[in-house]
Length: 388
Ligand code: NZQ
Ligand code: ZN
Image (cartoon, rainbow, N blue to C red; front, side, top):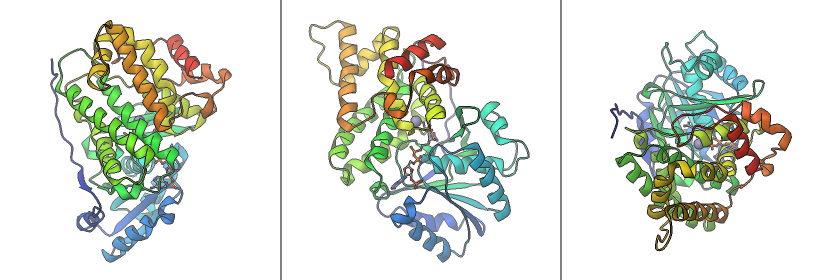
């Protein structure tokens, strides 16, 4: 049965080759002080920085910079950003970058007017903001996380060996996001395909849960088929606008809350992947790719009807003369072939994980309850061991 829900997604999107023009319109809504947040410098090399700064100046804004947001942003960097936002008396935080930059901007936005320690408040106790939240706008340069249209914000605490995401409510969603597929053309192949798998995983985390007849699952199958089709093209021809634009749009819908409405969700692959990230600082999408096959093969018997449906509706497996289990397994094999075809990392060793790290990674893994099997710590270890 479709569960009850309230649906609200307040993020305004500007999509396509002229999308950056939307920034001019949006800037009229906010005060003079803009905190411009970005990463390690890719936007300076590809010219996006100059274009954004040009528009900010044209709009008469005072620009305060907060650069150097690293992939998997840390709690220490967050503390620095909060100080910068306070010193700037920022009216708007403009995040120009990938999921890390967007997530970080949201973390700053909920912390700037709050006296408590943000790590403890939001990432350990999962509280909601009890203070005014600064508006965030986003110019996206890397596709995958869906951070451009959701309230997700993932922060890493290396000292505690934890990487944790808080999913904030609509007041923390970006007020607007600029999505120009061409802004992603300079991504290194490794980051590009890691993002492709992040999208895949987001959809699967929401699809592989529950047994009811749910519209969201039909939406997910459509998104998955589009994603598989377009990523095959983009892996061969990264500058293919049609494929890259479809992938960008799929990424947004994969994690903007729509396909989770009225149904349960899993997220265990993300919990294991994030624990791997906390121990290795590896690229998010690759941590998911490395553990997925072992996880799905382990839970397949507990969710057989959905795995069969996945094989038939997403991978086009021919069911003739096969048992349900054979069909379901063939679906996962087709998925594995696609993962190899687009160039994903298929094992944890390649991400720097060694056997002596497994116990620590198990301890850092949160156990979710929405999947087809609630894992025991031993089973988490089994998934990790098989993924080495
Ligand atoms: O820092 P710069 O120099 O910009 O380089 C970045 C970075 O090294 C580079 N890059 C981005 N756009 C580029 C580019 N290089 C060349 N050309 C461009 N156009 O790519 C590298 C990775 O960027 P990053 O932002 O870290 O990647 P991604 O978008 O995958 O974000 C990953 C973070 O998002 C979190 C992850 O855990 C991770 O911390 N997630 C956020 C979610 C959410 N908000 O809902 C959900 C996800 O499941 C995920 O957990
Ligand atoms: Zn993800």
